Image 1 (cartoon, helix red, strand yellow):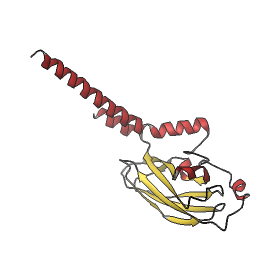
Image 2 (cartoon, one colour):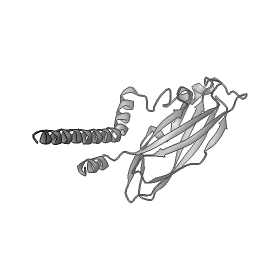
Image 3 (cartoon, helix red, strand yellow):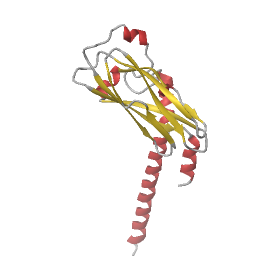
Image 4 (cartoon, helix red, strand yellow):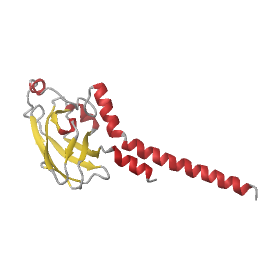
Length: 192
């Protein structure tokens, strides 16, 4: 009988430890948006991976357009949980010539009953193409604020540079849209 209380205490400690880990992982995941912004501000990167930040269009255009090659570029997105937005890339896929600039638009709508500030975090696959996918102008460089029921057209101008290895015929640009509201985290943590 003396072993039963110590087993219960051990189980309680393990349970509390696991609950603490879950809470810690949740808080870390939710803190990624401001951490990303802070790192970008400190380093001057402004985007994930490679040259993916602001680049001078004129410099890239000097290299010329490869009219003999076409690469399919696909556009995708993911919404983080709790972000009540409709998002639609007006173009899902396009064939591009490396070295030429292109424009696309993502249409977004805030379906919630409150103002929402969101950030779009870009990702390129295959990852080897990241340094060759140059965003000249991108809504992902800044947070987007939408009032309840408001819609907006978010613009992207990009150049897939000529240095993209020949073996890559398809490149996907995907954005993860995240609500940057820190109050939601506080409410979620206090509710546990």
